[in-house]
Length: 122
Image (cartoon, rainbow, N blue to C red):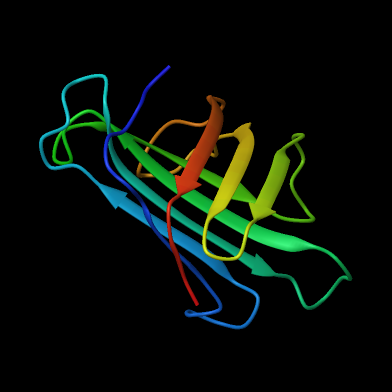
């Protein structure tokens, strides 16, 4: 399990209507800490109640750490979870799935991410 310190910057509807986003960065991250978390969670207009979720995380130092990418949508072949608790001024976002192979990092790695948003910019 890897953890990050600090509060993520979370927003809803700022990038686009119905889109959640979150960003967390830690330039002092150690080798087993999360140094980068970037999330977007947007509605998929081509199918009712479908979402397009992208998560990028780096474990270890921002430069030189190991990066992983989740890309989840209605075409995803592996199971994934998406839970969102919108409390108005705060939120909890939970995303789980298997990473895709990309130039940024390996595929086939299970990721279970929970972001506790102490504030949500709207």
